[in-house]
Image (tube, rainbow, N blue to C red; front, side, top):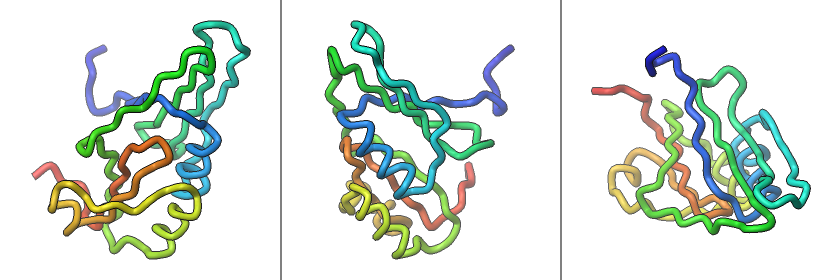
Length: 136
């Protein structure tokens, strides 16, 4: 089967602290925990936290190898953009900040105009866009 618009997308990232990541993504943004697995200390076994919205065609897999952790190295262009299609509620930004996020200026002025940028506990950037998604 070829890859097409029906394919599910998993975005995998290393995490320093899965509990902090869960607070941000689940309690802050409102994603659901889709799956979790705690490592048992065996080399090569990772702790996983998969979060997303049930029924969405994507999810985040946050990974921590307690024996040989990988340090996240996000850049200012590593963005996860959620298109809200409406003004970003102050209450949502405040909730994300209470749950470990930090509001930061966007590197790209486009996102300063069309959204709010927050850094998650691992340093990755979440943009809440006021726009709707359109490929044109």
